[in-house]
Image (tube, rainbow, N blue to C red; front, side, top):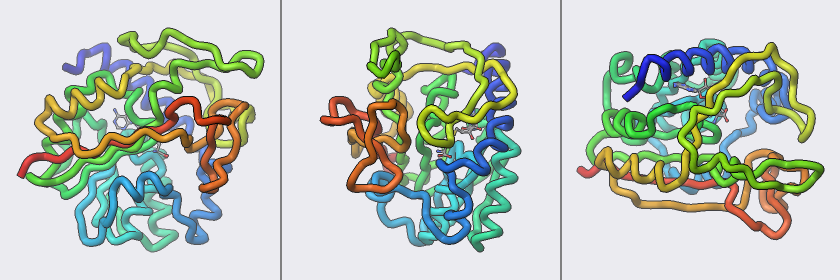
Length: 275
Ligand SMILES: C[S@@+](CC[C@H](N)C(=O)[O-])C[C@H]1O[C@@H](n2cnc3c(N)ncnc32)[C@H](O)[C@@H]1O
């Protein structure tokens, strides 16, 4: 159940995400110049996880500035992309125009989406940095089940929560007790990701609320919503340099690994709504 304090916390996060967009526009992480020139932002893991999208209807939740949503459209999916940061959606719309992609962008909180959008989809998809902003994974999973056609599949590609169990101090990774707590964690944000390690962009400060999750909580929420787990995959590859000790992945440009691959850094889940 989403409580009134959850709503308040999400409104603060929403203000924050709108604030972050300006800093992301000229960041090396999003690299909009390369994107406009035709480079796809889809990585190997999400392409392998989702598979062929040609002609399929695809609902992309928490799409941010829309790069991967546009990527699916360019691969032939009929894409509806949702986010609650108006600034991010405005960027997505303009990028879609720039590259000639047809994406329907919808402004909504994920939890309000059944009131704001009609229809059912072959695929529901979400990726990289989405779960920690959601106060109720059970309700999130029910929204996903609501929008899947019978036989449709939900795909998640997400930063592994184990990364939140570590913090970096003086170049070493130290354990934090975050993972098995309920949240929300409240902290002040003064910068955002987007550039080289240690070069986060300063932004006007805001209070952010973060709900930790474990992979088992994610999978249980999806199963409780009636979906059948088909794939659970963990990889030692990260979508950005989260820790100083990470090195570029020799197998994929823009991806990073810890030397020796000691922990999972990303995970993927596919779960089907029974036909
Ligand atoms: C880290 S970004 C997702 C990043 C995206 N995968 C990318 O690489 O650009 C998180 C996104 O979730 C959105 N978001 C957070 N909570 C949300 C909610 N309750 N409903 C809708 N969007 C939400 C934020 O506005 C933000 O655009």
